[in-house]
Image (cartoon, rainbow, N blue to C red; front, side, top):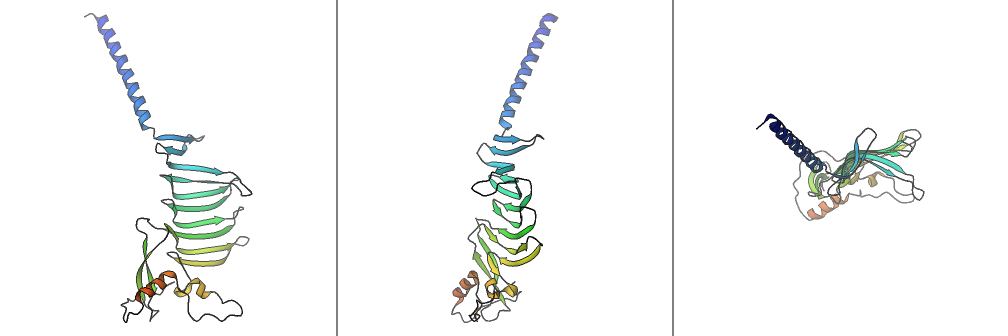
Length: 240
């Protein structure tokens, strides 16, 4: 075989190998592309991704135009399988922040903060995520005979997100706290474990109720133990 023939064969093999490599890279690129739709920012980042299953994934920027007198807004955050996850921020269309929210599995979880359209504090909310597969929580309820003692009780929660913790309402002009509310697993409480309704003044012309209104969970526990002569309780903290 002459040197010329060997060189020709070598070139053919090299060209064929290069062509095959390009084909493999093209197939790999097509296979590695998981998005059926997305947007690209001026910086080259991808936003608003939709995967091959039609689910929203990763960082998103959502714009809602004004409609029927309602002001528009923009919000940004991350999706995991079309569920909001982590920190989300909401802005006016002029760019002023009006809300900071936190999500878990698409439901509110933790501190949520809201502002007026000019940036003044409006209110703070506190939420707790509840796993829909295990919608139960344990709370302490007062003993029927001795309110200084408590008993642990398991309750079923009706939603995957419940009010839990302190809520604050502000006077926008001054930033002064106008009202606070305390929640435990969706139940509204006041000082020393009393419900909020128990600490509010009675309507004019009516005497205050002698009995203290109780949260629904406590009433259900009392019904279950009604008529029992002895209920075992444990020492513990008072509510509130």
